[in-house]
Image 1: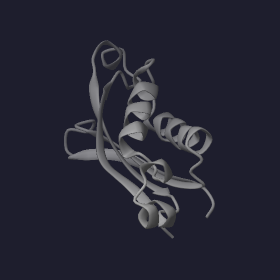
Image 2: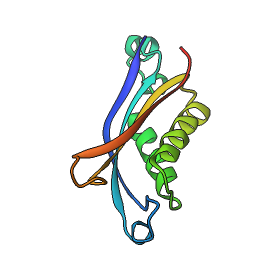
Image 3: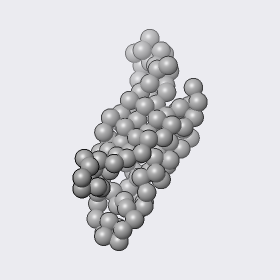
Length: 117
């Protein structure tokens, strides 16, 4: 199985359940593993057959920052659904990390997998 990867996509957004969190921007780090058949892109060296990581990154940043969200679980699910519906990714693994959310941990997060190969 071929995959396109994005690691530590940094998104500054309003995220959290507490009132003070709803007044500030916090950093989320997102890792993506996306099933994508890279054979045609590689054989032709043609961009039109590739899954563009810049386009994906820009779309997800816009999606996650368009309105306040309370849970990183919601961010993960929105991300997976966007990739599957707008980019025709058949399977995706999404990890959303929230650094500094717990003072005694470097980061906390969730991982989901959606779709099938």
